[in-house]
Length: 413
Image 1 (tube, rainbow, N blue to C red):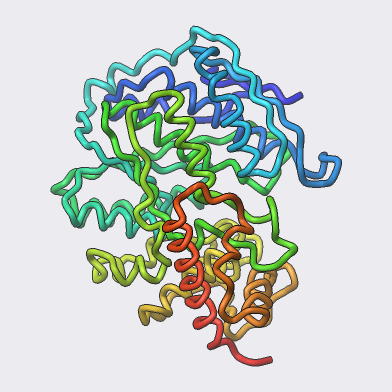
Image 2 (cartoon, rainbow, N blue to C red; image 1 turned 60 degrees about the horizontal axis):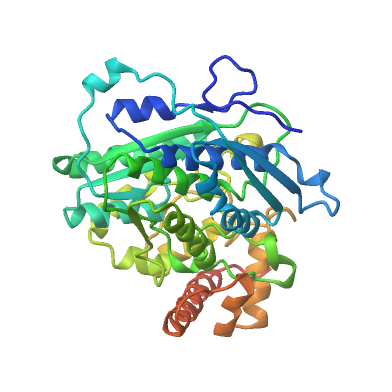
């Protein structure tokens, strides 16, 4: 049994977080359901990252029961099955969610911070990871003069630094619109570590909802992610099922929207780039000149801290993970060159571990240079219209071609 504490200062099993400092620094009055949702997500994220998959009977799928204090257990029981399905789809585990009543809302407000806070008036809230997609999404919103609040999550400096540096450039460029970044620090207590953090997107979405609940009714939550990586179609048969991440898969989003609907939370969730490849996001940006000049500030890498262990610069992309490959393919599409990577997959020989994503792409390209659109059904259900399924199939093929075109430049060995 893993026991943890939430908002219980001094407890050695407490989830480390600066959530309330961020909330008070911006003068937000968040809802009880928003707080409940964020706590459920924090508990799930902690279980996901502190219960090793090696302990599961098959070395992967764990049986996890969450006992979480909430303000209105009957309301949350209406969401029980949806939350369990959402977490199960994301992580490949068997989840049981058991809400229990608690009257505790939040720690005492920091009156000094709240007195100094400048009220946020935006009705658009966008996720901001510090990656290229979220940066393009931010630029596009601000270039169209949308007053926007941005939400980030981090648990270490390797994630925090690119978010802060990329957003500083955005503030300098669009300062007149007063864009604000709510950067939430959430780190599970120390213990065993499981590296497959599949539930992180649930936490990210929940933190966005928490912030949105403090902005009033009618907030639009924007998730700026390209459709090719959102679908994340398994490249080989060995990557079928939960071995393929499903962060912004259409089924993930549909389940999260269902939670929002059941709770009757007063905001909407949109994915404006779900039918764009990453290269198309770059090409169609509202300010491509600014984005080109700021590329080096963004971080798309799946494991940005890994390079420190190989005595390389920890602040550059690894170059060999799936997001790095897709990033380089997108840049190739629009003719961008010169970005530094720890490993150059076009002319370097990689170890077996580092070459797994590259080899998966190469095998998929050889097997089917023009993949069947129906492959998109291999990554999970698509609860959308037939027209949208067709568009998802098209973005999958275009994204696949972007990567294939980039890898065609690879030196023959």
